[in-house]
Image (tube, rainbow, N blue to C red; front, side, top):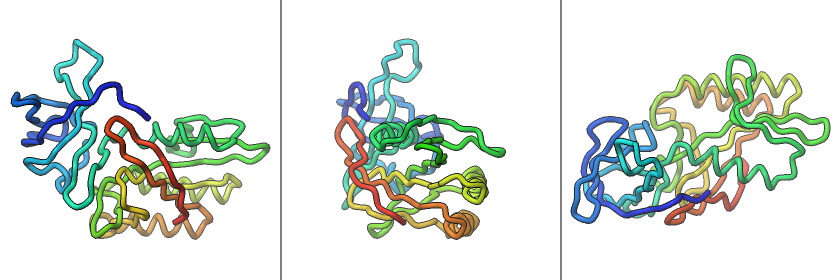
Length: 221
């Protein structure tokens, strides 16, 4: 997955979930933040950030904040749209007969539906940007939607689908993701129940480039 055009900046502050102030070559710019999560451990004043230049001249903000450099870890892609894009590219190379995004199942929309021969598959994607002590954690804020998706996957697995939840690790140097039970114990319970039902847990390790994000390795959780 490649970005169109990237410029560098220095993070200043974040007035709300949607925008931030960034120093770009000495000019303070108001930029759109492509992640409505808290990201408090990432967006620290003075942090180096990467911005994608918008191709829409009518937009109020010229830039999208897509990555930030975290001390002692390196660059973290924090674009919440990136995980589904890189997984879509990755699935296209996995020899499925059919890959369809945004598949309605039960009362949810699961990120990907796939077919290989007669077998049907469901895959839910979660992006991970929270790292503590070299380990990734999800979620970084309570997500009722995420819990519901895990329940739906467990149900689908019992109904004959082959189901998985894929954690896209949007940083290098991290190889596993654990449920953030301090933030939301319900997610940890739902993940354990899904695994017990046969749902696979995948860790998708990424290379974070200056203008790109790419899945380079798959590990089982």
